[in-house]
Image (tube, rainbow, N blue to C red):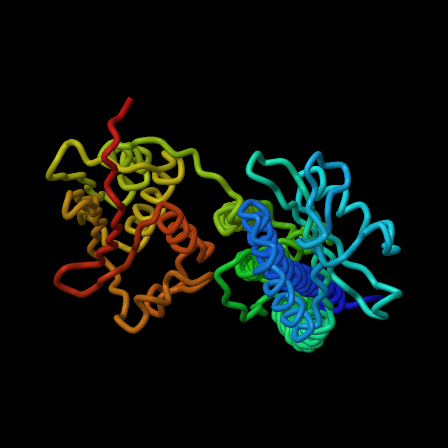
Length: 485
């Protein structure tokens, strides 16, 4: 399997190599063109100067002084290793005379390419070419220009032939330098390719390793990559996935723990009443209880124990639902006063048995929260049932509702058994009973269910208890700004 760093390196390296070689070739070609062009211009200026001087001498008929000029031109050519031919145009009506020429073209064998540029000069055009010359045994540049009379007629041509040795050496030297530069460029570009490929591949490898760690179940693992590019965004997404997996795992563990707790609690709490029911039933079936009145008493106890078990299972089911994060409440805008009054009315008969008086007071008729009516009513029923169970006879149960600082505060106060301060927080735990509450009937789950109802509505609940003020449960709900339909 090819590593991504090698793939990136090869791709990036090939692109950089091609680019570097292309740039080298372009500059080499450009330099060759400039060097040859400069030399061509130099010979062209020389040929044009000779052509103008020849044309002026022909015009003035100054053949005598022109002979001296020809010698000077030939001497200059010999020093520069340049051949300068002044030839006559045989096709002209008034061609250059012998006194103005230094080569008789008809007596000289010229290459075909040279003849082409001479004919082009006869046609009034300047033309040149460079090639290896068998006569000179080296590469030569040949250039021809026209010589005209006063009427503009082409009466001859000047042919300049110069060696390209110096230019070729310059070009070769430049190409060597360029080759060295290209080589250094390749080394540099390949080094950059290695560096950038590793820079690109390193976070990808980290992401791969992080994915494997997550796949192994270590959901809290983070990539540790901080970049402001697409790879950084991918790493951030991986970290978000890690958080989501941790939450999902915690959720799964919570559900599993709730399931285990539910069955553990059910088995623990039902063991005693089932044993009692079985004992009474066995006694009746075995015929140990012959007294009719005693048998009815046993049957009543069996019925009571069954009722307790029914309430226990009901409370456990409700608690299990409330602890499930997927359990959805039927939320609506509620007036807490109306819910409290409804719960109070449902307990009138129970309160009458102990000659208790229940009152609901409030500071603002519009005390609105957003919640589930049945669950809020169940909360009040739980608190009022506890108050009825533990308060003294001929006392009062007070429910007071107030609006304050964007919240609705409800207090349920009774006057009876006091809860020790060190146990105030414990009473919201499963199956906990206050130490001074004796053998009162109950599942020990009511306040736990109530606490979960409050939490699911974004509120809080706590208790205060003393001899003077009684026992007061305080529930605080966030107020809603929505209006009732």
